[in-house]
Length: 175
Image 1: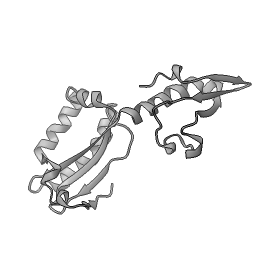
Image 2 (image 1 turned 120 degrees about the vertical axis):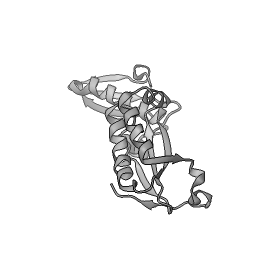
Image 3 (image 1 turned 90 degrees about the vertical axis):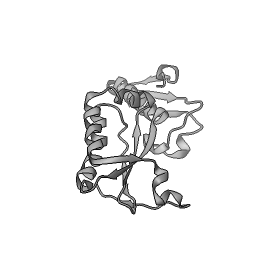
Image 4 (image 1 turned 30 degrees about the horizontal axis):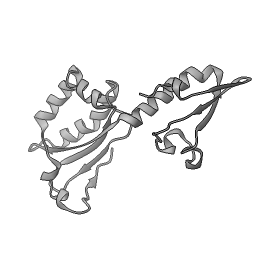
């Protein structure tokens, strides 16, 4: 996590605070902060907020930066057991919301796809490696994983025929 106290300078201007943030080696996507690319890197970020919103903004901004810096994107292939396809898809759709409630994943929307053989592929983002480790000790997550084990086998992506293709294509699954 970035210590924003090392990267900010406040300039009081009546009811507003101007933040000038310097990130020497980090530039998240400009859209992450609603900024135009020309206003973001490599120049400092200049943001203005009301004094009453200042402390909330700093903690929220630090959280946003932390999520972009330390997130871990994962791809998982779930091969459904016979007759369990619908139940598996429902469980996959609820996986990220469950992990989000536990504070383990970012709010990035997962991508869910289907391979030609019916395997469900999910791409999602954990908050960090530490969050992945914490999931292995979380009773709610462990209970959810038990449900997965009853419905599918997790397989290596290389087992999918599409993984052998230069441009692997999958059927999108609507939420």
